[in-house]
Length: 371
Image (cartoon, rainbow, N blue to C red; front, side, top):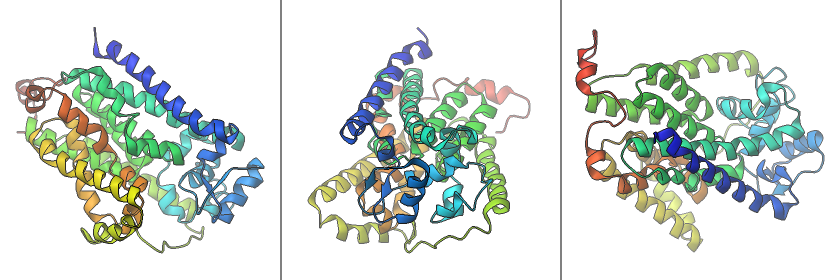
């Protein structure tokens, strides 16, 4: 039985989990999908925008979350009318760089707003199912159980992404698809998928960097396309954005996402101690990160090395991100799927040569292969 056939039940289970979680929120809210758009009571501009396009919308406490910005982007993913849609983005250029999720959810610009709100949710639910399928394929190729793929829809960071209408599910699914392509020696496809992941969420470039380093160390090859393609995609899209939205005003953030190393963690601790559940959750996340590092470094598992740079990222996150446990877990979410795979995939497989790839000798025998 091939890994692809073996993975289908896991993908189906992922779809069931994602659908159940969505219904758990939808049913108490009268099956109103705008609950996942995360309009906020204290975000009047975005909420008024949603009401103009949709009528009555469900509003969350405080400022809501990312979904309300992705909704505006999905209504005009190519920024043809930035004065209408991009105008409600708090930081237009920063938000607009994450283009893949709203482009898909917006039907590449063809869906009306009442379809977009459902498409945002459906895209993320399907993304969880696809991620489970891809992770199952990888787990089987690496000698593990296919059911390890369920650590995609059970990934706490991705579940928060589902809840707030975020782009992380699409971004991570693209990374997993890139890994499947790469271990099958389809470097061009893997490069395109890593570029797509980066256009869904810019920090996913770090995943490609981690995998690049592993290939360099383990196979003595440097697959430059998997890091060059994401950079090129970001540059091209940034140039397009500069032409389309350079005149759209935005409000500079009061607090940035990054700062000096460790300072954000120390500052965030002051917020955690005010809420015992937040403190417990955040300490669990920190414990997982600390336990993950030595296992990942000793392993040769690509999904773990893709997650490793997010440990470094966590050190530079500001208290603005870290003080909210759900934002903290979203920022480092690749770790929560890689960690159980490290524990449960046979050690002999983890420490050996890259499963699913051609033998190292075959690569070195190729004309022009890097040594």
